[in-house]
Every structure is written in C-alpha cells, then in structure tokens.
Length: 488
Image 1 (cartoon, rainbow, N blue to C red):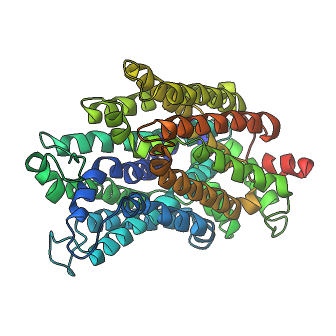
Image 2: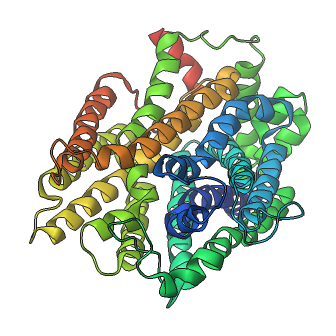
Image 3: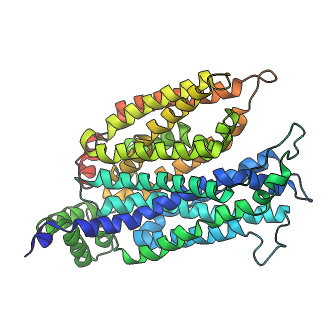
C-alpha cells in the first residue's frame, strides 16, 4: 500500500475544494456587480416614458437579488437533502448563468431593445432574483460541502477559502467594472436632477451596465461545468445509504487508515434517529442564527454594495480606483483569517474583528463630511472593512458550516443563512435612506448616525461571541452532537 493510500491525497482534496469555492466567487461576483452598474442602470430607467423611476425603486432594484438570496437559502436545506449537495450546486450554477444573461439583455424575445419601460424593469428584477436564488443556494451549500469533505484539522482553513473566493469575486468584478467603464463616465446629476455629463455618460447608460452584468456568464458557465466532476459529500452519501461510495471518497481524502473510523463516526451520528430541529436545544439554533444576523447587522454590505458612491461622496476624484484598492485590502485581510483560523481559533478572531470594526465605524461617523479629514475617513472605512475580512467575513461561514450536529445540519444551515440574507436586505436597502437623513438642511446627521449605529452593533457582536459562541477549533463535525448535547 503506497503512502497516498494510507494518508490520502491532498491534491484530490484541494482540487474538489477549489471547484466548490468557485461558488463563493460567483456569490461575491453576483452581489457586487451592482456597485459598478447601478448608476448607469438608474439613468437608463429614469428615461422611461411610462413611469417615474424613483430613488425608492432604485434602492429596491439595487437590492432585488437579495430577495432571491432569501428564497435560495431558505430552500437550500430541502434541496441539499433531496437533491444532494453536488446537484444543488449544479442548479445554482445554471441559475447564475441565466441571471447574468437575462440581466444583460432583459428585453430578450419580449421587448424592444433599449426602450426602458415599467414591464422591462419588472423583468430585469426577476432575472436578478433568479441570480439571487443561485447565490442563496451557493452561500449555504458551498461551505456545507467543503465542511463535509474536509478533515477536521484543516476544515476551518478550507472553509475560509470560500470567503476568500467571495471577496476575490468582489475584487474581480470591481476590476471588470473598472475596465468596462474605461474612458467612459458614470452619470452625474445636477441640482435639478438632470444628467450633467450626458455626452460622456451616454455609453454607460445605453450599454456599459449590460456588459457588467453579462460578464458573469463566464465564471457561471465554468462553475456549472466543473461542479459536475466533483464527488458528492461522504456524509450525504451515508445519509442516503451509499456507504461504499462514502468510504471510497473518505479513503481518497483521508487515507484508508482513517477512512473506516470516520465512516463509523458518521454512521453513529446520522443513524441515531431522525432528529427535529430543536433536538439539541434552542441555544444551538439561536447561536447559528445570531452569527448570521450579526455578520450583516454590522453593516459591511452597505459599504461593499455602495463603495463607489461612498467614495464619491467623500470627495474622491476617482471612486472606482479607491473601490478596487479597498478590494485588494479585503483580499489581504481575508488571507489573515485563512492562515490563522486553525492556530488562533474562531472566537478570538471574531472578537478582535468586532472591536476593529467598531473603531473603524466610529472613525467614519466622527470624520465623514469634514473638510480636510477625507483621508482619515477613507482610512477608517479601510479599517472597518479589513477588520470584517479577517473575522466575521470568513469565520461566520466556518462556524455555520461546522457548528450544527449532522442530523440537523441541512435544516439549521438553511435557517441561519436565510436570516443572513434577510438582514443583508434590511441593511442594504436601509443604508441610503439612513445615510441621507437630515435633521436640518445640509447637516451630516445621517452620516454619523449610520456608522455610529454600526459601531454600537459591532461592540454588541463582540460581547455575544465572548458569552455564547463555543470554540470549535480542532473538533470533528461529529463532536458537535456531544457539544450541544451537553449545553442544552
């Protein structure tokens, strides 16, 4: 017996994990593509002859994919159980592709090309919701898939790569949007609400936003194809009675020496009984849900989705350059989590990240809009974002993938991730109205209130982790049954 048969193939494990994290890349790509496209899209629909495209409509259109995310994540547990993890991810890839094509060309086979109407707006939002369903599925099932194939000693690191892929997907789309925009300009509105630079922005209004949405077809098609070649997870195979297949995959990943023991542990926890959601107590589900709620309530996606607009409001000349730079910072700090999560543990990273975010958020609240302090505000935004990237960004997904016992994981993950997308929608759709609030004409009340609120939530998140979240470093997925059994 050669060494690879005894210890498993790291190359095989890495190859299937890399395919799975493409789903994370698409998650990031799909949710951030709107940041570059939203201004051109807004100007396009403002030209509609049959209705008035209001800021409220634009806020909904910019966030409509999140409705699909809520739907996709809510049904992810059912699909992951009925179809399996692999086939559910194939479905997500197909939905990504359909959404990218339809968002680029919502007139396809139905409407006159280039003519904005209320019906076209409805169809555009339907395509965005379809993409959101794909994101919702991928957001729940990709970490679940990786968590179920990864050995316990490197599971946190491998699931963290999924967050790296999400942030990398956002960086890629920031850069793609920047390249697509090129020498063209985003529309700028004057005091009367008219486009002041119409000649420079016309291409963006007619065509640019279409290319931005359509660019997602490339990674979506690649993901849908490659996911066909990865195996189903051993834990799902045991759930459906395919023990031999499960043993074969476990042997290739962990080696024959460990595979039989792991299979035995899986069978013990999966075949004990059919378990109800609250079998392990209310606290187990509550902690999972609140991890998701805090990941969004700290306000990070308000920054990621509206980054160009925020930097423009700061007075930065080239908002897209600053947005790309922030994307690079996010990548680097996500790597901090990837390479320290198994050494430092989950809780310390979450607590320190929460406090770092609070510092950044309070910094923005105090300095935003003050002449001469623009760079301090920009640095505070970077601190806020970077602190999220080494903590709540990846570690929340690690914990959601591993914290629930085997017998309730599918349903519990679906509920936790659905709450995540619900609060993502709440935060994203409320950011612009909150940010633009004024007590008196021209004051900055909305600016400091919004980031002050996010800072307070960050402090509460740190206390929540300190008091209630268990440390899962080094524990197997099967250990979760014992952990929650003792705490209920």
